[in-house]
Image (spheres, rainbow, N blue to C red):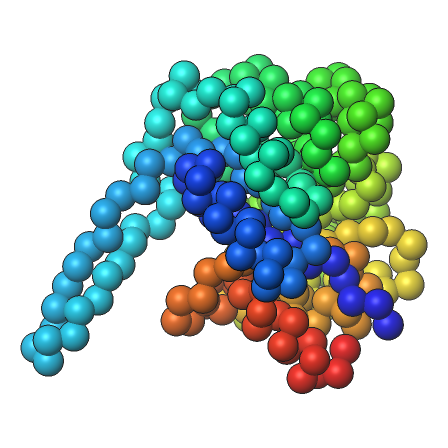
Length: 265
């Protein structure tokens, strides 16, 4: 069976960090890169340093949702996109995630749409257009993407929970005409939630729909790890490799490929 495409989602908060991370992702075996343009609006804080009685030092970072956010005017969109385009060799998915779906874009919706238009015009291979975008605006963006030979990821993000298996299947099937690939990402609150995604993707193994399904939280990585037998077209991975990364539902790109080899997928 053919392995799904592996997309590394960049987590840098500057263009330089993203370029460095993209280069490392290519060496690690990524097939494509997700540029989370909205992360450029984050200002990374200094970690909190603690030392226990044995002298062991631990550095911890607050979740990204608690980081300071730059003003919209602080980022030169055209200049940043040009630098990213020139510095990333792999195919790119351009995304500018809104706050309502767990992103960090600090401008208003009209400014975000302009950023997406600029991403499409830059020659990105893919653009991520949330299903939640107002219909007439999304239709316009779809037409622009088609004119630029830019494929569309139609994304759905549930930042509170994970629907039932049947609901996930319905979301993917009902939105199949809204993009070249349908992406669903939920939020796992317990292992039962994680099973809903595995059951949904397994039930859809014979569907002729390109999709990627996953979740954040403990167990959210199960669908990523078993993606080759769940008919998933694409899997999102990370370059992060900290302890207990799986508790966040994430998987390092090297670990993902090693797991597939170990499981003989």
